[in-house]
Length: 61
Length: 461
Image 1 (cartoon, each protein chain N blue to C red):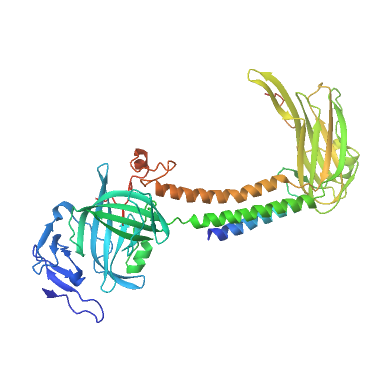
Image 2: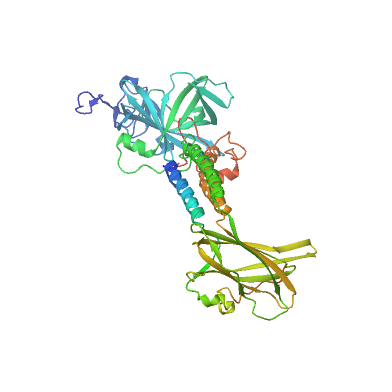
């Protein structure tokens, strides 16, 4: 029983891995923004990233 | 002497007698095989070979009642032969003054003879006397029987503390024997030494459900508590198979690594270098030229390096599809600090960073970049590289862990089962804290500090 479960589980792991590699999945978080106007190329400052106003840690150790 | 009533043809006859002590009716099931018979009313032990049923011993005052889970007279089919329960005894050992008892059921078939069932806290054994002597040197920790090696488990002195029914030997309450167990789960070989005579028997583990099914008993059997000495590990067979499977999966994983790394295009599509003057307050954002991401939908890796030294730079990135207007928006910080304090030198962060943008469809793209940092920190030089279809090593690592962790857990569970088994043994390993006389062990497994011969103990007294 456990053997069969592990067989199915292992195949699922390898299948998921193959799909992830093939489709180019990533562990990084990236936001998708639709319909960015073409005018951004002419006026890059008009685009405001959702990551703007980032508060940085600058103190070091 | 009286008859017990009509008996179906073909079944063993039952002979009925009366107890000379209390006058209660006695039932004799094993005919002339019985040497002693115990009155189930007054618990007098009687000489079954004597026509007048001479009283050999009275013990009811000391022991009280201990009703058998399988009533005397119950019949069940074991290995194709019908046996009847004709005797019942409780045997007890004492560890640190604490009594531990188990139960033995004597089974009889007029053609096959006797066998036993033993029970300790829901663990059962089907026991029969060996017909050949095992190969064993007194004091040795292993024993060989029919080519199979058995490991010594425990030795103790067991005392009969309660009897009921009939027995093919001169049973007495208070009689004792030294019992040694050697195990090879699911079997146990027990040597029972009385005087200079040793009787060897073999037990095979049964669950309570097996016993209830054999004797067609009502209700549910008592739940098994703990791990018994010859209880087969439910996982031991699986462990080897699972590691074999895990090994096969890891080989397949390596093959997949080779396949994906050889098939990955890992194509550089853009490499640029810039500088960011933090002394100038002006619009810092800009866009790159348009470049093409070709092939199937796959990832894009953006690697950034910056000449930060006890400083930071942050990038608002947007990878924008010029054709569809779809943007992948993300921010990355590159910061690097170092110094020296009372603990010595230290560093924090790095001058490089890498991020993978998942599942980017093919098309024409440009990158919008907006650097920011503290003002008046001079000029920061930075560069970035975009690569298409880069294999993700992290997924292979996660897959390897995902395969190894369950196999490890099952192995650990199996090892823990063996640990619990050998923790009760005289011969447990150091890791098992093997000795049963350890206080810690007694506290951890207070209900079964030791076990014996063809049965176990019980502290139900």
